[in-house]
Image (cartoon, rainbow, N blue to C red; front, side):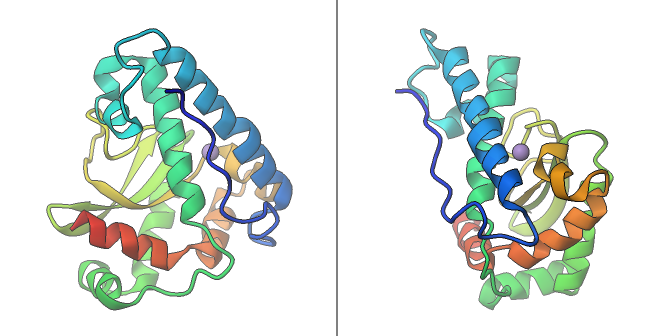
Length: 200
Ligand code: MN
């Protein structure tokens, strides 16, 4: 069964002024669509055709570069859209406790994630993962993610931030740190909490 592009869970302008409408439309409708199309091409007629996206991603390094890049792209973006919201709120409950115990405060976590994203050379992602029951911050190059067999730091992602230029260039140009500051206004913390509880 071929993979398909999931609909955005909000209107493309919903995250303005932090993420602009045109960026969302191109990012979702063109970039994510291309990962889906190229993933489908890469697995068509192969033994991998009927595997789940999770199964492909976990074994991405041993399947092919096309599955690693496009399967990762499809998984990462599907995860990312759900993590954004115009009314994201604040971490609470168990997630807030885990953040305070691992990093000291929400601000300290945000700074660590923003630094991981800002210092990732070229294209990639910054992550908050659960590893051995604890929260950690990591980053990956290109469309890799912490579920992959090839990841330097493996774990279960609960938050991921796209730091490819296509995620911010129209509004922020070369100022990746400004984008990484703004994005905290639109993080959907209840979705992060859901991922956290599922990861435990
Ligand atoms: Mn992207």
